[in-house]
Length: 192
Image 1: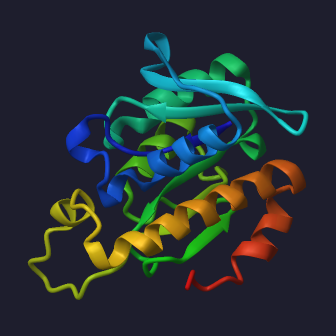
Image 2 (image 1 turned 135 degrees about the horizontal axis):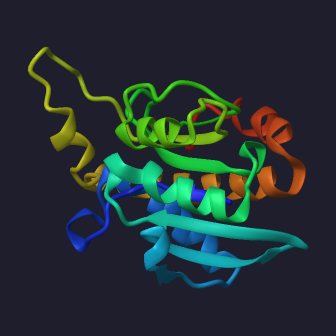
């Protein structure tokens, strides 16, 4: 199961915080599957196959800070083990264009991941972190406004490349496992 994190609603569609949704949408397009709203999971869900691997794509519709509610419901229903789960989300601690795959870890201040860790009662959740750029920060910096802002015109081409690179990384996780994907993509510092 691959979970893209974001916020529902057109006003957030292209925000930095919704890069997880955009990557999952791109993956669904590439493997030609569509999302359906499933109220019992508070999510948009897509099911399909890629190279003989069963796949569930999930976009929680609970808003970012309650993502764990949706994820825990579907993980429980399908009895998905943590190694078969991948969370895709934005990370302002990574430079724009960088991606990092990890087997586990803390939330690192990300409220959506914090919710998932809380609901699943574990930090052993594989994840793909997408760098959304880290501005120069002072003590009065408004993180919420920044992550909810859209990418500027100078960043849009790079973000398109990051979405494609991240889609390829997810496919590598599915096909070849987390270790191989980490070796291949964690060395790539950033897209051109």
